[in-house]
Amino acid sequence: MTKTDHSDAHFALGDLAAFLEAALLASGADADTAESATRAMMHATRFGVDSHGVRLLDHYITEMEHGRVTKTPSLAFSQTLPAIAALDAGHAQGARATFAAMEKAMEMAETCGIGAVGIGNSAHFGAAGAYAFAAAERGFFGYACCNADKIVKLHGGAAPFHSTNPHAWAMPMPDGRHWFLDMATSAIPLNRVKLYRSLGTELPEETAADAAGEPTTDANDAVMLMPLGGAFGFKGAGLAGVAEVLSAVMNAMNLSEDVLPMGGPDLSTPRKMGAFVMAMRVDAFASRASVDETMARYLEKLRSSAAQPGETVMAPGDREWAVADARERSGTTLDPDTADAFTRLAQRYGIAPLKPL
Image (cartoon, rainbow, N blue to C red; front, side):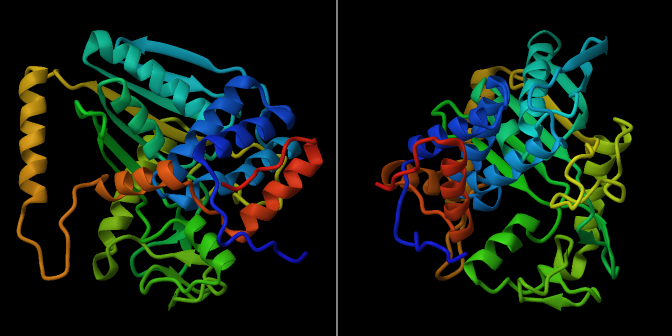
């Protein structure tokens, strides 16, 4: 199929969100699933994490249509300790499960100071930052991580072992421009490789490897990712192990070695993925006013720290907020694969096609 040229078209964030939710509802997803998946994808697109943004819509609908993910799940919480709960997500779409888990974590944190939820029988949840950020929006310090199917080689290894196993943290700021860090434990996420394939863009050095485990910059040759850290990739591999323990081991879910591949070919069998979220009261150790003052002073000192010629020192989240500001004003573009997928979905479900600005 010939790809439509959308390279110069910009789409309003609100219009994108409306299209995503309409397509998910038309596919048979319940209202909570459609809202949660849309919220997670739009978080990523808003902040420039395009590998985990609206481009995932077609995949999420495909998973539900083939039965891997339940369109109308039943979520079941169990709680045996005041600040710890477990969620059996019933093979829900990952965002549906994880936003619900973070709500429970915040509920426990309100009275206990901290709340942690282990998630089982879940699915791909997109950008981990969406869930840590959700806690910050409610005034809590948030954390989230997950595992998935193996795609990242170990340091010195020649075969995939871990997933990208991301970690995300967020700290609320009084002005609403929250500090947040969302990072894969691979050098780049797999969805960025797919995005670069669609765009015909070369990969950065030391981010992906070919079938023999050798580094490559050709996105078409990349079959596995490199762990974060380059020559010190054992650090990235170790951080991936932390997410594996919290997400898979402690929830008795599939290890990355055992999770079915995201892209199939089996799209009917649930992947039994795990995840973990935590929320903490910001005033757990000191007054909120003193915490806010200290955090503001920390960021001021960080941003005013001496920079190398031609460089800018930024705090986690600064780049993302700049992208969000621009996209809220002018909208965002779509890569060719995503634009064509949206056209197909609009035709399939008889919903209004997305219109550029």
